[in-house]
Length: 502
Image (cartoon, rainbow, N blue to C red):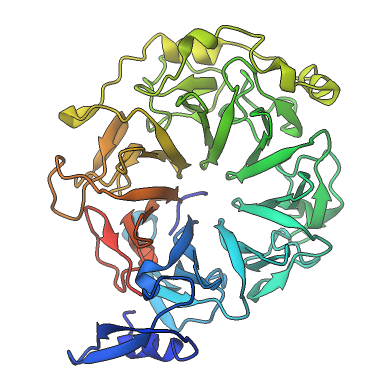
């Protein structure tokens, strides 16, 4: 997930791309209105691509999906080859002062060539990475800071093998850096390290032009002081990891408190070594999500907590009146969002989660002071309601963090979002400034707030777009459609979720 930037083609091109598929047949309709038989996908229960999505990841103006047949498909912005294929379409990108420029794009998904056996993927600022069943990781797109991990700084339209990395379990793409967790539960990172986002103090390389070179790593480097890691997430310039015991570490830029360590600012420098976060609030964490400059976590007791930049209400709590020393409104320690506080009685027990702390954790903890100022400021004004009268679901299924907003998939298979809403990011059918109040994502453009999107099993957010995977393995997306970010085959704005065009 990452900073904020985010034609038409005929169905005949899509039909041609399906020629290599085998299996039973399903039906669709071509441009002339006649029935056309399309091969279904292996492992998709006889369904076509529209109901074969295994996972989705949204980046900065583009997105990618892993399908049940092990292929990867991408759509949206393509000026740095982040879609993994060449596109001749041009889309208008809005600039300041009312100007526009033409940017390469593709408004509906096409297959990334050269990939098979894909198990998961991640879309970043202008690059994407996929993990294969073989345990290999491959990346494509922009590479100015070595974020592809292929020992180069040249962009690559074709997926490039990450150098020297095997046994990969998952990968997370940030704005200009990438991290991976291996089956040995170690974390490796590569790409930009100007903010300490790689978790190492000494960078092996300098990337960029001679006039603007920055510390970087063109190939993976091991993040020290970490063990038994099962998840990693990457924001614009910060990274967080979750341990098998539910503990959390973060590192990188902390100008808006996105590390959650009770401090903010970057004096004297960013934090390049992992910081173990407080065990009392961040105990039993089961999932993480990194936005542009904020972070969220879900706990095993149903609590959802966020920290970091909060100028658009993206943390789901009231904006504190004082937020020094942050550059913007912020909360520097994890605070629960309204309606998802979990077992609050255990939060004050500092011993909770201490069993998971080892000698390495203690050594990391002792170097960074913590404070309660951010948490106190947020908790002092936590009177933020849930609009439209719908009671909160008892369980959080998945949380996602976008550029300046967040979304939560609930156990009743609906979604709620909060934060900025200038490009329909909240999916509520309205466009406005948004804020910390949760809004229910509606079923489709024009729907009432009382008609929510249903059947949601997971959610993924990018710079200003969100996509939800439904239980029938189809995808619905909302938010900005600039540069074809919704994957619906055009550039028209929608004020609610729409089905992706395959």
